[in-house]
Image (tube, rainbow, N blue to C red; front, top):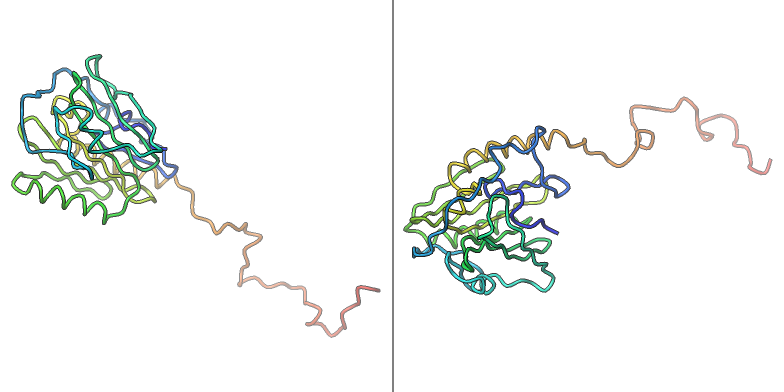
Length: 252
């Protein structure tokens, strides 16, 4: 099962090692990658066109939790979680659901949505491009800022104090992990979901992936050296059919 969405987000970036667990560099998670304390309130008086797009509906900052559930209904096998990420005080609450390959979560302030996040695990590049096309077409008149890396890519749209972020992480072996997040900057910034943090986190991610690949054992055929035939080696003992003596019967 996927982890709850929040606990170890690195600027919206969730890194997975070869065993599916979050990884960090050999020195541990850098202090610069940890979420910061939330010190301001979201502004629900703003109205922008930005929305998190679900199959059933859209969800916007300032809407009710029911709007989030309608846009991203929980599958029958989903498990609910209510854990907040680090740095949030008692004025905030979290609600969400989690399955082995998909999650949806909301950070609420005063029973209104301050941040909504949808995550897909182990999808292919085609699925990413389909989702990007939807958002690019919908917000074609809004500037998009991108951060491109070998393993990590980000796309940002921002209007006033509301920000939409898409993050794609190339896992070691299992495709892409996609994160779609919409929120007020009062919440997005402490979680490092901003353009400047994404640039820094991209470099950290490349280092983490490089270190992880170096730790991987070499691939093996599954056979021990004794079981693996070597065409360069020939036995000095002739087979019975190769000698001048007839083979002895097993009855002798």
